Amino acid sequence: MIVRSISELVPVEWGNGTSHRLLTEADGMGFTVCETVVRRGTMSALQYRRHLEACYCTGGSGEVVTVSGERYKITEGTIYALNENDAHYLRASDYEDLRLISVFSPALRGDEQHTLTSDGFSQY
View 1 (cartoon, one colour):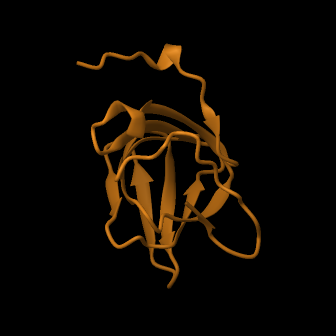
View 2: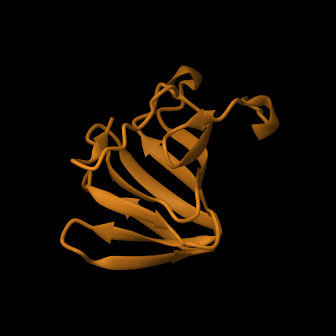
């Protein structure tokens, strides 16, 4: 059994927020669970080429924007799943942080960080 508190973890700074990696590859579960905070007023161009990701919003608000421009409002109680390694933009609202529980499959090592630039999607 694995029992772990977020207070025991050092968050990973990923560029426009933080990620507490609650379960990682080393735990042998085959998936990762993170508490992710996206800082208010930020937009991140992201793509996970080796992982599928689902995110459940536990607080705040924002939106997920597809490469083709479709916008999906994210508020508390909303889940979105990137089931095709979708490149996307993740934007937190201008007035509050976006808080997510993120699940990755297969599991992350736990030390991955985004490289956010204006010329492409950050990938890992």
